[in-house]
Length: 61
Length: 214
Image 1 (cartoon, each protein chain N blue to C red):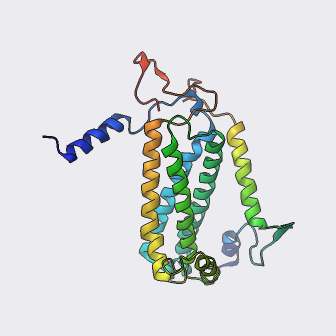
Image 2: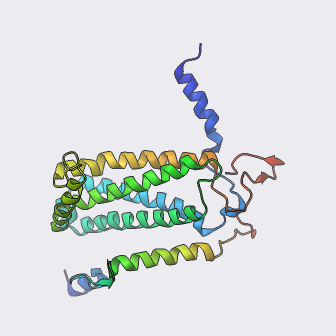
Image 3: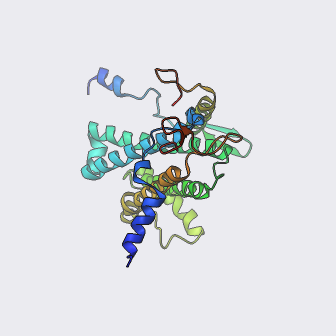
């Protein structure tokens, strides 16, 4: 595989190292899992707050 | 004389009329993104089933060594990530709506069972990756499962057994439960927000509450 192709297919985040962890008292969670949970919370909030699109006649479905 | 097959057919038609299998209108409160996460979960489930079928056809050598194999393997993983993520957001939304209201207890219970069966399916998927990660997970999980007494029947270090659980038994269970869950949603309708009026929206064409409104 050429270098340019390798760069293209490489992940956006370098994962070739031991995982990073957050320690908070008895709670220990990997940064990857924490990011996934935070993204889900953001999606949940957005689902409640972002207006639902209307159709061409301006009606809700 | 009525037969059991005729009785079953009549009951099925009565409980879920064929012309109400798929909706064409929805109550106004469904115009919210939070109501989309159920169907997003179903869509992700179809992606997982499809990519899993391709992985089963081609085999581990293919998904470990070829570019297309890596790609389909990643689709299967990320389809699962989205499936679980969408399902949990769907769960949060339905929990805060108290979605078991209005005779929807079976809808809620089948959703819980689908969630639990999905966790088992995802877990057995991690066990059959055929790499060091799956070996590590199996070695760690066996102690926990042995401590609760199920190790003799559900042996996580038995690759063949875990493969069959993952590609036959658990997908069947999840598929059946999801099917019952969706039928329950069609029978009872989507749950209204707390304080909103339950029931079908009047059909202006028919001049009365009508079909296809749930």
